Image (cartoon, rainbow, N blue to C red; front, side, top):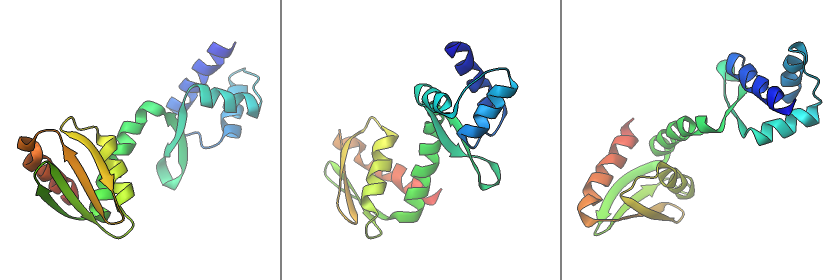
Length: 150
């Protein structure tokens, strides 16, 4: 029963913009499944469903694998809104941000998982991006500059 109910949940969220657990439970009931809000909540957790932006400013349930699209959008937004400049120093790309924005921008950089990047260190308005090979520093810096303009 659980497997068929969870399969139905995936089908429902694929075809509908489901905003609440109660709404999902109603759709399940209409499809012939008996499920309490607590059961729906456990199913959501087991299926690793997350809230995503839906249409008309509402949120909807979606798959965790949709998060890469979400990260991509957020990474671009973080750069456009907070990164002010890009510079290089040996194995480092140095990003200057608006005050108190470096942590969020560094998290965005880390989420990109570029193979050239070893890691980041963020302060309040500065991020040091460690690049694996000194020959890739300028390329990485140029990629950041492109993200700022998107």
